[in-house]
Amino acid sequence: MYVSQPALSRQIQALERLIGCPRLLRSTHRVELTLAGEALLCRCWPTSTTPSP
Picture 1: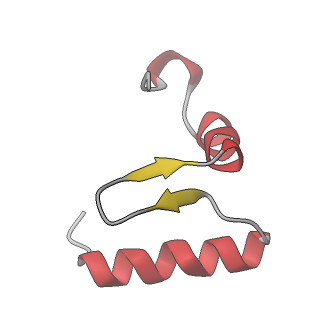
Picture 2: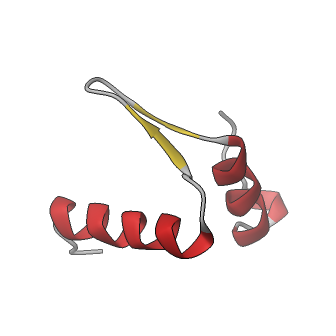
């Protein structure tokens, strides 16, 4: 994919601002999808290849 971590973080934050709700819960040790993030993932990912949590 060749995208730096800061650039990817900015893109995700821009998406969250555009949509109007957070998609990720961030802490110093982990990142988790919110319910809205899970819904977006399910809409974007083909059903047969959706990763299990």
